[in-house]
Image (cartoon, rainbow, N blue to C red; front, side):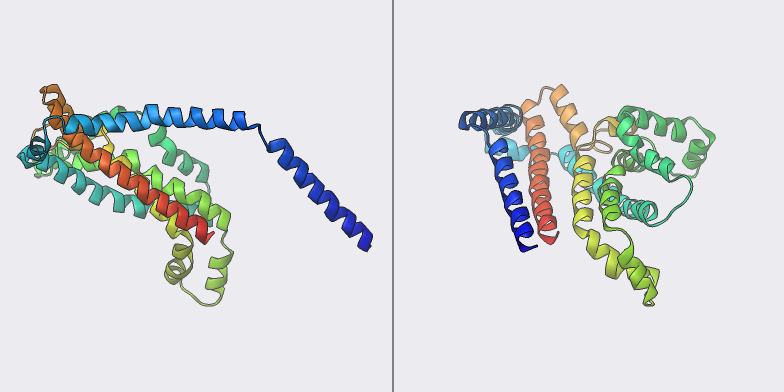
Length: 290
């Protein structure tokens, strides 16, 4: 018996060693693969980012700062942050509720709900913007809202709705696989011990999904800040009122204010880099917790 175990362990070690030998590439292959990867990253990531900051500071630091003293630029930054502050929390509520329902309960239409969640990935943002204009501008419902002093399209509510549409899959799609892999044993144990559904969520479910939730929030916020297509359709491009940062960049560029447009673009680039750093930290924390 002991000899059989020894033989089995020895065979396992030999198998692992042979696998390592099979997976060990020659040095020139590793160097080539690394060079190709770094070359693509440098060409398609580092160079464009450097160009943004070079063009932004082309006329000097004072011209760069003057861009943000403009009222329209300040409004665009404020509106972008405002839309994100509304859309992201709403997406968190929807994403957690949808992931909870899909992973913890069995009901008819679950696959249909999953398809609806993925719909914004398949539908062009421009089409979604046109749908909101159709609903809130050319229908009785839209006219009724307008008559009661609530303007949706060409106003902040329309921008929020368009942003919600294109971003709501991110939190849900981040949480659904995570909650499916965790199962529901811990929740069932907590409920069997007398915990309410709300307490079970706060004490059991939320701690288990916190890193995945933060990851989904980071991705959702990044998409919300940079959304152009849907927002462009429903905003009406009203200068100083409905232009977000991406729309204001377009206006500046079309007005031949290239340095100012790249200065605004540098803000989005910095936000993207901060988002990437936060995403990396969250993933590291999640991997350590796992």
